[in-house]
Image (tube, rainbow, N blue to C red; front, side, top):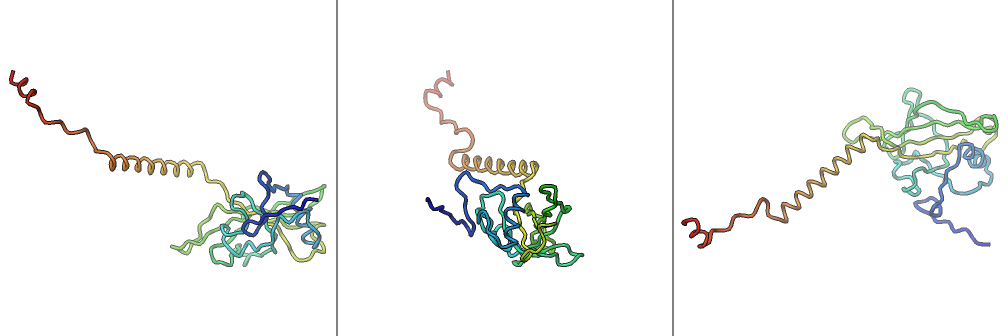
Length: 211
């Protein structure tokens, strides 16, 4: 029997080239979160245990090239009903719920609840925090699946949103301008600017002008 070789990248298991971990919400709840909550064997150790509220999303473990990363974590509560946010331990910002909670249905029964959180980054130049393109979806057990479980485990799917088309076009135009500036600078620095100076008249030219 061939032994499976698991490659770890930045604290998380790296899948072979061409493979992606892309479960449905029902699969994530019933085959991963539910066994984790009951301390039962998992189909794979692809989801690491990590406190996503301990650091900035950029420093989370796993392959940075993957668009979506999943983590087991104990559920965190908002600091208060007024603030409605969850600060991260490193002090780089906080996660704030956005939108409404939605039920996850499997076989006609509610098995989980999902909600989305947006990351707000600390602004070094002011007391306000800026909303970033980082988001994560929280999956927790609900209904019959949430009874008699060990601890309050949840799954977080962390991902970075796409840049808007307008912003992408502005940034590309800026890069084009910089490239053209570099080209003009290169031409001006390596070659003489303007047409070459006229050569001094020769004796033959002078005689022709006199005739």
